Length: 414
Image (cartoon, rainbow, N blue to C red):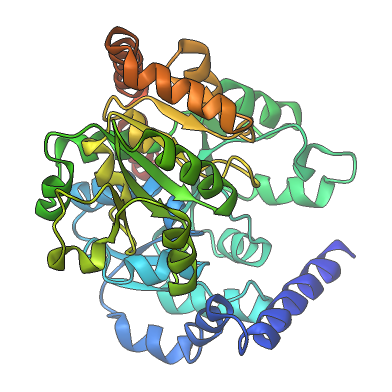
């Protein structure tokens, strides 16, 4: 019965996205990207080569899994790599990623799609990053005796796997070869339901952000804007975050410069943001035609460079905390940048931990934001202490990739 309802939900979801595609650019890309996927995939792969399949839901999960992808490629160069995405936010940004041999959208999780996709790729092994528990794909891999690994997974008691009605979903977990979880509480939840195919490896996001600090990219235009100035970066912001930032910009423009990287960068959104800011703003796409030293706000209207921008910041604000969840705070912390965010952060252990240590600061309103920015910008000793806490926080938690690769090597040798 659950199998029937699950497949019905997949068909309904796909149908609704198709209906929405004429009116939504994201839905349109979701549909268009999956057209003729069988022919495209068949033409792209070489039958004589063995492949390993990595799957990420979106851009965030890809960046989280990237250290493992690259470590695997370095250790096992004989395998080709197929990389799939569920969301356009991942595929459209990383469709030219050089670390994979073929990159495509994951077809909807129907029985027929799962069977055909797996038959075409015929992977030697499969890695799913963090979540994405697609039943038909998992079950087909299990039936074909193809090992499937999940990594950087964090489980919570409220998830359906651990509810009284979760028996059907629990069976799915038992068909996974190995689950690398972020923490001991996740492993204990699995043990409580008699799922022992797991181990604690930590979160590969720490490895990813640490790698960024060791391979810094240079941005001459942004360096020109930031020269001899104290910078606050606001990353992955949504309208509620930007309302606070506008007030802050108009108040602190005499002592700070601001870089804002909105989560969505369509023209109307950027226009609205610029209209609300009273001081001089410049878009990155138009920066070459402006006197950047005279500008006080730089708006990033491109995707894919945010994690590199925190190297220019003294402190940062991360968006999403006035919506469902905050975005990635580790990208700023790894550069020793104290981080501020909204109240919806509790699903992220690193946020809770960093708050407790004194390197991160949640705010509920503009008054609280102004207070902590005043403290960070006006008290050097306080700022430097917070900065050191952030740097050490990331350094001490890196190493998940090595643990995963060692376990994979031992499983491959069996």
